Image (tube, rainbow, N blue to C red; front, side):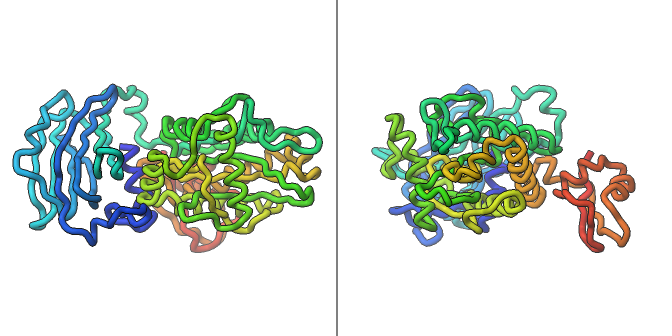
Amino acid sequence: MVESDRRKFLKSLAGLSGLAASAVPGLTSAKTAAGVQVKDIRLSKNKNYVRLVFDLDKIADHSLFALQGPDRVVLDVKNAKMPHGMVDRVQANSLIRSIRSGVRNDKDLRVVFDLSEEVSPRSFLLAPSGKSGHRLVIDLHGKKDKTKAAKKKSKRDVIIAIDAGHGGKDPGATGRSGTHEKIVTLQIAKRLEKDINAQRGMKAVLVRKNDRYMRLRDRIHKARDHHADMMISLHADSFPDPRARGSSIYALSVDGATSETARMLAEKENAADILFGDVDLAVEDQMVKEVLFDLSLTGTIESSLDIGSEILGQLKTVNRVHKKKVQQAGFAVLKAPNIPSVLLETAFISNPREEKNLRSAAHQKKISKAITRGVNKYFSRKAPPGTWLASSECEYAVCQGDNVAKIADKYDVNESDLRARNSLYADNLLAGQVIKIPVS
């Protein structure tokens, strides 16, 4: 139930209950609207999942959760009605044995899917498009095809997608000594992959493994295919004035850029796809609208800002920062629904000194380790449910004279695991500090 857990988790970070649509022009919040009417239900079978589409007359607040013993999925739609017998139109199949519906709290609609096996449920809303109106989409992913090894693994790793900016026919910025941005970003990405994979509870996946061109949306799709819990897009900025220097971190904004620098940078990064004629990034694009709609509902942007702040705090120890706070703008590569994403400008490749640092293996290692610490510090606080980093056997309040090795020995756990679970990169502990004891 990774997708469902991740979605519930991200929504809770934003302080949301149910779904809201205030960020999408032309849509009215279901909390203030009249009752929702279900107009039709459609079912389609795909290779790995079953999809049900509920046609609605307006946007709706809803929740989705799975139950076991027996296996079933429950859909609750607030202030909604459905014609009697409509669920009978959906024929039983190998996954769904039957569908039942009823009324809760005199006004809410409840639909129960009785299943033949355990599933990972996922839901999302689609805004009107063409002849289609508002739609609530439910995807039920069966789990029978999981490998035995995956079944035995009770706690999964947090997955971090690392996107090395530019590549192939798109070299990105070029320094005065001829250093291409696409080369240094890939070098840092590979170091970061190694450092993250050395941490218990985290797994890194490279979006681009070699010098090849990738469309911005293909990068998003790659991260989604790996079920990434976050994505880091690595870049090296340039500026006409060679004195400009420092690292910066950016998150997505749906309301506009927080600074002129952020706006200009977003336009430059987004221009790559337009330059090579692969995709139109205009806001009229329906996919982008739906992605932004989904983002506004899940708290992804808030999570991105939190992650960005942690990474920026660590980068300060190895490099000057150009902006002291995480900036926001409409970066196309950050528009991944349900995946908190940040764009990291590691340094100004247009600055001769920073260009030299970017070519240095020693400096690349420092940048990589700083990013790793920032990612670990965030996920040690807010890891998605079901992950090793979100779990603990118990908590321990540090006493005077305690150290990491002593606590690890007391609870018979690996010291490196204890450090990873609590993001401990120093030996000094404070009396009263609460330490989470990791699961084995």
